[in-house]
Length: 462
Image (cartoon, rainbow, N blue to C red; front, side):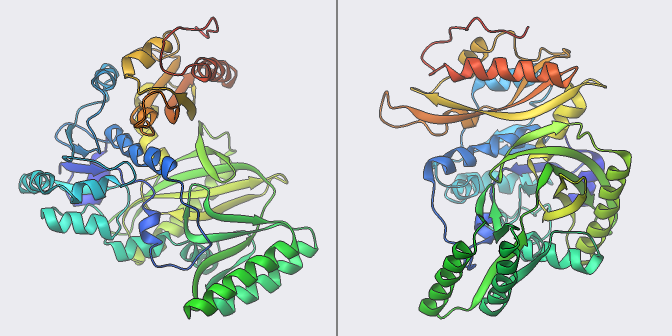
C-alpha cells in the first residue's frame, strides 16, 4: 500500500485515490520508431508478461482501483485478503487480447473509459507502471489525470543513452562505453570495442530501450562485432536513416547484480527507499534477495549516487519512483549505476510484502517458478498442491504467491495441449539456508505437476 508521501509526490495530495495500471514492458512503446538491434517476437512470452498486470494489486489500498486484463481468480483474491493485502476495486475491460497490453485492452473498451471518467470525477488519478503515449491517450480519453510526468519526459529519462550521459555529467562511475545516436558514433564505438575484444575484454551492445533480456547482445569475438557492424550499416543504407539508439559498453566480470529504489519529489527532493540483490539469468530478471548483503560503505555509495541521479532527474522534469541497476565485480569494485529505470520496478511491487509479512531479522527471496501445464488451473488447486509450504497469516516461514494470473496466461485454446506458465512468489524464512530448502521443495512439487492433479509429493519443508 502506498505511503502518504508517495501519493503526495504522484498527485499532490496525500489522500488522492489512484487507479493503478500494470503496463509492464512499457519500454516496447518507448522503443517504437527507434533504430536498435534486430528483434525477434516471442508472442507466448508476451501473453505471460501482460498478465504481470496483477502485481498492481499489491500497491493498492482502500479507495483505490486496479485495471486488470481479466478478473482475478476468486480463490486468489480470498488468499490475498487473508494476508491483509487485497483491498482495491478491480476494473476489467469487456474483452482482452493475450498479446495486447492492459492499456490496449482498456482503450478498446469505451465502457471502461466511462468507469475511469467516474473515478476521475471522484478525484482519482491514473498511475501506470510507466507512462507511454498509450497511457497518455487512455488518460485523455477518460478525462483522468496522470499520476506522473508526461510521456516525453518518461521516455527521455528511461533511455540507456540518458543513463550514460547523466553518469558522465555527475561523475558517477560506470562501465567504459559510448553512446551511439547515429552511424558515425556507432562506427567510432565499434573501432574502440574492437581493441577491447583484441585484449580479451567482451563488450555488450544494448538497445536504448531494451528490457528483460531483449535488446542486448554480448560480443566476445571481433568477427562477430564486424558482422553486426555491417548488418546495421546495410540497414541504414536501405532505409536512408542514420540515427541510432544504441549503447556499447565493456561487459564486466560481475559478482552480484543490485537494484535500488529512490523517489524524486515534485520539488526535486530525493528520498532513499531500499536496495536489493537482483537475480538475473542472461540479462533476464528472475527475482530479488532481501537483504542485499552489502557493507555499510557500499550502501552509502549507492545512497550518494541516488541523490546525484535523483537531483538531475528532478531538474529534467521527472518525479516519482526510480529504480537503478547496479553491480559489484569479482574484484570487489562497486558500479553504482548501470542503467536508470524511471518507472515502477519489480522490487516496487515487493516492498509492501517485505514490510508487512517479513519479520525483522528474516530473509526473503522473490522468485519465479516455470510451469508446464495441460489445462488451466484454479488457485485453490495450486494452494492444495503447495500445502505446508505457503506462509500462513502471522507466520514466519513460507511462500507468498504474489501473482497468479501468469500461471494460466499462456493457456492453449486446444484442449490437452501443454502450455507454459509462470508462478511468482516471495519465500520468507529465518535464514538463507532455510530459504533454499523451501525454494527447492516448491520447485520439486511444481516441476512434476501438469495441473491435472494436486497430488502432493513426499518432499516437504515444513
